[in-house]
Amino acid sequence: MSAGCKSSAAGRRVIPVLLRRSWIYRVLMSAAWVVLFVSLYVGASQ
Image 1 (cartoon, one colour):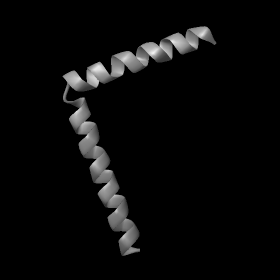
Image 2 (cartoon, one colour):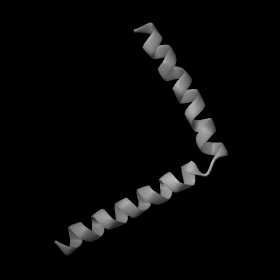
Image 3 (cartoon, one colour):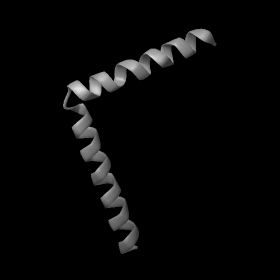
Image 4 (cartoon, rainbow, N blue to C red):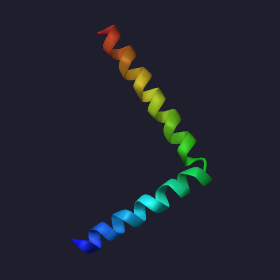
């Protein structure tokens, strides 16, 4: 249990740094907005 907590804590520290330094964060945000708008459009059209 303690090992899992340590790894998750390390992951929380590392992941934001990776997202900040790379273009992956922008791609993920763009994809999230696209999915959001498409789902809203599909829901409205139905």
